[in-house]
Length: 593
Ligand code: ADP
Ligand code: SF4
Image (cartoon, rainbow, N blue to C red; front, side):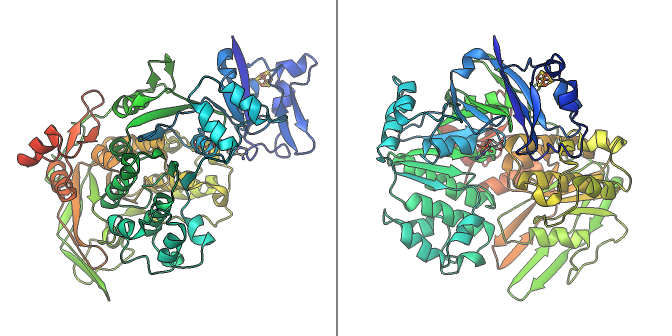
């Protein structure tokens, strides 16, 4: 038996601009019942889930893709924890926090991770699906009787639980506080650990400045420090890696792990799989359909949880939640290219600013090659990309101007009141709808739904995907992408990586990519440029190296070693001082191919 889930994307539903096709063609409506109606108050479609037969005709006829209809097993209905409203998102099941452990939540954006955090931290009182007549605490506690979560909710009810949350958007922290980092930390530091955290997270040179003057990475680490310094029982970290480089991500991971070591309960939402793997003791996967519904899996070991996620199949529940599995072909990259197929060669380059300078060894990019650029923040990676893209002029060294380059900058502008489709038309130099490029580039990255949205209203992840696609649509020889993973969820990161690899190989294109997601870089790069030096003072870039040489050098500087998961072939960080870690360090083999 199944029950119906009908969800309307209220932004996409625009009854003024369509012919009310859903209402016209619904077979239940045709038989005389009111299955889909126009809600005159909110001027949006409204679907009666009790009489909908789940045929999906409305989904197909809606010109704006605003409707999602799903048939779910009836039994699941009994495990509904929360629903925001009529035809709105609903969450089934909850993860169980574990004392003294870090539980990682893994799933795509819009699948309910923040909803979970809000419920477990007491910010949202779960309504068990009864959004029009919310239950009281007694009913909620009865629902949880006999489960581990009962005492958790009892404590929430009695206000006995102390939670600390690192919110997803760190810019909100800067907006909400008018003062220096140090003042903010001191305000919240109930555990007397602020000095230690400043050191641990490398914030010594940042904390005396006002929050509005801090970079994204500094603000992120400050927000982590604030959350850690509170004296709570439960700690939640929503995407703590954003804006940080790999060195900083490792520091953040160690700081969070120290909380679990002193017996605190920790939950983390994260899209950088290498980092999540390194950080978590357990994983719970959230699956379902973004915007419509999310289901929380049972708890798994980190290794199994991440593999299950990549497989798209949950054996314990016999559920397939993605039609294909993500695989990592470790041999897909190559550094064997025809030397005559060089797309761009550049001589040694130099650029000096009053307090920062960067030197870059000569290099080249060949047809069909992805060159990955790795290194800490503030070493000049973006400056190099800008010089190659012709946006910035080097002080010494000249770049071949004949090469046509498309450049996706790190920081994206979203103030424009312009529809996504016209941005894509312009990049493509022709209407995108119905074109070959639509099939080749737009479809694989699934952004067709956004055509009629204004750039201004896109989320960070949506804007990133539109920026990547409009870069790749341009007919040029070299694509330069600065931090394509930022704001993308785990699923989109893999989709972008796989697509980029295929796009470059099959169409004989070339790309240079800067990113801090180790798994993404490992997946897409054929060769790599390493940036080294002193952040904010001087940077130095190598020539493109073979991936194994570059990764080995990079991992050595991080003092971590990689192995490959035998099942998925994804790279995993060895536990510090484990047998493999010691063995690989002894033989100088930090990167296991
Ligand atoms: P995640 O954190 O995994 O990205 P969220 O928990 O933020 O997912 O959101 C899940 C879904 O719930 C989203 O599709 C979002 O649109 C919807 N949602 C979140 N908050 C509300 C709200 N207050 N009212 C209605 N819908 C909401
Ligand atoms: Fe009507 Fe079919 Fe849409 Fe249900 S799925 S609302 S029955 S058209």
